[in-house]
Image 1 (cartoon, rainbow, N blue to C red):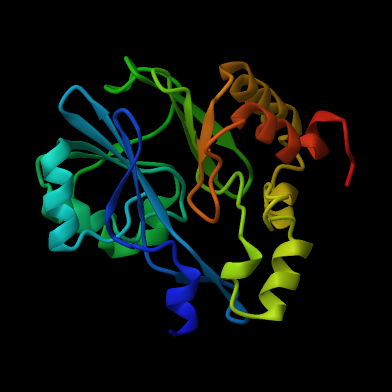
Image 2 (cartoon, helix red, strand yellow; image 1 turned 180 degrees about the horizontal axis):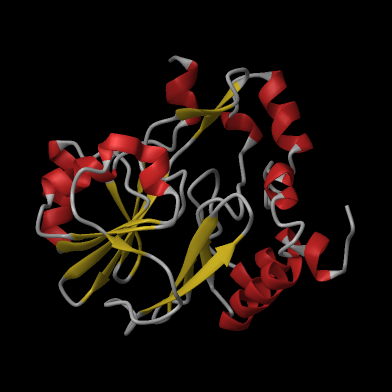
Amino acid sequence: MNQTVERTYDPVNRLKPVCTDIWIVDGPVIRFGLPWPKLPFTTRMTLVRIGGDLFVHSPTPVPPELRAEVEAVGRPRWIVGPNRIHHWWIPDWEHAFPDAEVWLAPGITEAAARRIDFPFRRLEAETAYPWESAIATLPIRSRYMTEFVFFHRPSATLILTDLIENFEPAKLGSVMMRWLTRLGGVQDPHGSMPRDMRLTFARHRPELKRAIETMIGWDPHRIILAHGRWYDRDGTAELRRAFRWLLGRDRS
């Protein structure tokens, strides 16, 4: 078996139930970063059902088999790009489900260039979204990007993208990758906000702290992450641990 397959959360591109009305889809490994080294990242999409409609967070590929599984549980209504990095497969979903609304975080149109050639709506504020009867929305801004965080109230599920990354050493393909993820503060079981991303909040630490305190106040049972092992329990405790560098308990 090659290393790329070993690093994924098999089976990929299949609907996996999390709890009532929530599914994840583990996608392929992508390579992201500087021209060298480009680091392998596992990918994960989250789907939330509200009535018969689906909220599609951070899309992964949509092959025919997955499309059929998705259509069996609901109708994709909102396709969401939660930050400027997570946009690559949004055009595929828009093509597969042209009746869905596409919602994009700031910076995606610049990052995606000509690939976003269809109408979309902008993620901007905390309220006035069509999904807010079941899902709370929280923008978290830094000088590099704005990430939108979502909280499904009925299941107490927090959905993050890059605010916490949690790479499992056994799924990393090299000693260098294990060293880099540990140095970056994103290695399981100590996953957190990447250290380079923390630097982009240098002028926004009070706002970030308030946002983390808001998430802690939601008291999430679980936290779904886009990269690495997600937390199926003890969500509030994991938030406090991952952000202790910010909350005053640890200055590391």
